[in-house]
Length: 554
Ligand code: HEM
Image (cartoon, rainbow, N blue to C red):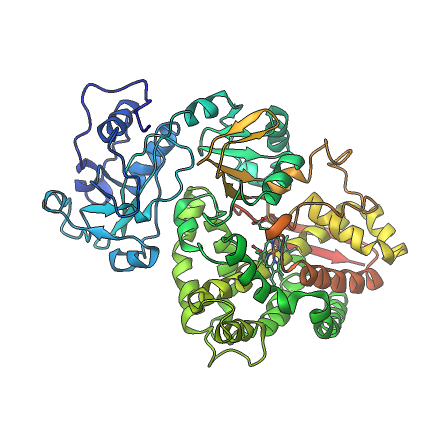
């Protein structure tokens, strides 16, 4: 079943661990990208004896530096897919990620540097879903002496049939994660939509779902497109967040979600509504008096940071970092690129806060976070789920709404006739909010593992592959929304996918809408026109919004 399917097998197979990249030191290090032949040869050397079951032992095949990895991954995306972890995950912490490293004589003797903590065989309980690719990484290790990410790459030869399915799917070398694409994704999305219901992104070895019907179907059909293997675009993050609400399915997910959603239901939010409305009114009054302000920071940050953090009940200590965490967390969701890698270190800080600060003795009594601990005490959710559930509140409750608010200001500044419509008829507010989220979805895309072969409008996605679900692209699908690139608050796009859909649809949507409604109602009373003075869009793998948006108001 695991027969090698690579066509080009090199005559000089790579022999076990490759030390060339690791032995080079410091600035003079020379990187030796893998050649296509080497990649094929490593795959061949693993060949038919491939780890299948948790607990199977496999030999390390290759240790590469991060830079070498990146080069190789980019040069031969069709042949090798590797995974990396943040430098802070030094060996002793690997166990947190269910990695067991069993030293073996052979590889230990061949340690490439004295600082290398780990060498040996890795057991396959670390195996991630293999994404239908021909290869994957079993584990990643770090050389703490140099804070250098080194990688243990175990190649996997894909199951029969998967590669045929992938090669017969529409292919694209488009990279939706370059700076240019993130800033202006629309034409790229259109090309992907036009290419098919699912398009294989050769660079990332994942499918892209960009049509409305395809994205919605993937979101609704959790058995075929489960979330428990993670919904991010890299295996490291998928391991870290596994087991939180976002990354779970079925009964486990129901149990976690029912606790999280309690304070976020419309009725439960009623007491908060007054506070949020009052805060919005006084903030807007102050900003309008100033005549100009930064809509991204002064306007958009206020409610999520001041009010929502209080409702969540987190201790003051460390709160000032929450905005950084939220933004970086979303960067960590991306496929492996420089932006993703640079953001990984923040995860440790965030998890540390969740485990040491967000604890019952420090949380505001009666707060949402405190409710999670109560649910643990009642046996509704397991205690191990606590830190991840804290992240469920901290991560998505800030920057998503902040982005949505700044996007809305930008859209109303650039479409003054739409602002006039809203001011003239406040009943358009719900539709206006939906249109903002459709037009410029704050979360552009997550992903889903494909659990079984599935036909998406004639394109077959093989079991084991991964598909990026681009909410942002689906919301601009001309097959669904006529003239999708026109911002029109009368459209009433209640079925937009900006909050997702299906079992994982956003639990915070009522709160997010409440915050937006409060701010834009207050603005509509006092502002006739927004004029953009200066803008700096945010560059983030997942979020779409503004880092800075200075506007004058009159
Ligand atoms: C405009 C603001 C927001 C947007 C655009 C947004 C978007 C989304 C999207 C697209 C998903 C679906 C993820 C998936 O398909 O796997 C989601 C899920 C989620 N959101 Fe939001 N969100 C927003 C605000 C919030 C707020 C304020 C909170 C918390 C108070 C929150 C908490 C969550 C949680 C916990 C999930 C996971 C739900 C589950 O897996 O069952 N979100 N959000």
